[in-house]
Amino acid sequence: MLRTFFVRLSENKSLRRFAEQSSLGHRVSSRFVAGTEISDAMRATQAVNRSGMSVTIDNLGENVTNPEEARHSAQLYHQVLDAIAANPLDANVSLKLTHMGLDVDEALARDLVCGLVAKAASMNPPGFVRVDMEGSPYTQRTLDFVHELHRMPGHANSVGTVIQAYLKGSESDVEKLLAEGIRIRLCKGAYKEPASIAFEKKDDVDANYIKLMKILMKSGIYHGMATHDEKLIRNIQAFATRENIPRNVFEFQMLYGIRRDLQQQLVRDGWRMRVYIPFGTEWYPYFMRRLGERPANALFIARHMLRS
Image (cartoon, rainbow, N blue to C red; front, side, top):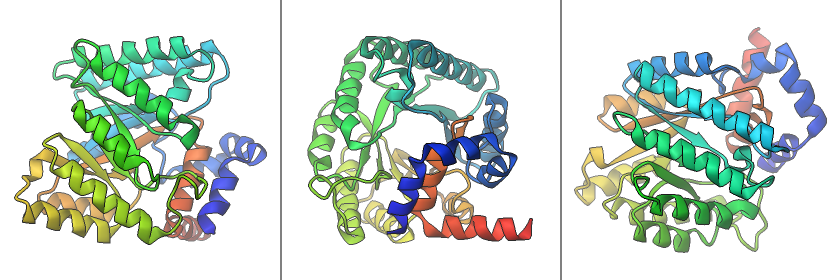
């Protein structure tokens, strides 16, 4: 119920305008969003790298309304890739197709994302672009897009996508992605979806996550296990140990500002960790979905505000 409440808040345009334009909103969101500028993301990435963790950088935004906005979004990612190479940083990038203009001009979105993947592939060492998953209306379009990108010459090692365990069709999607050797980030899922296509009970989502995790871990392809759930993490660790899966052939992934203690503990114990660092002015929907995913995040913010 709380998750549904925050998802609905994430869709409230009036609250979004107020939050993204207010100093209070920026102060509250700073725990989970690196800042509004590329330089903010670079500073956060350097700090996380110093802690022994890799990073994926995301310029927050989705559903642009015109080609100029899409081109501007892509240009920001080119600048991020340049900054990663120049510093250099242990980082890659994540993007959403609607941020690249998928709903405005699909051919334009394809060209923009192809350009970014080609740039990542040409980096030394080669970079990587993760095409994020959005709500269910975009699931198949995203998967088709990633399959197409992956088949292009020189792109195979520089593009991957995301699978959401709460969708009932995810096992079939995983099988198709693995058949082409495509890297996957496995997460639970952050959007409100109908019961006809998504598991509603946490136990069912967790069970499907574990089922998909085992398939991915046995695939021989490098994947990311994205979760803050300690029970799931213990399941992953136990499976890797039982199946003699080396710790350097997969990674855990968590969000910036969430369970920093657990992130650091995993690194101390010799597991690979990647932190998802978002930045940008359009942070409100992302922030609200994070609060909905984990009620403890909302309690943390409330305590933070009371102390301020």
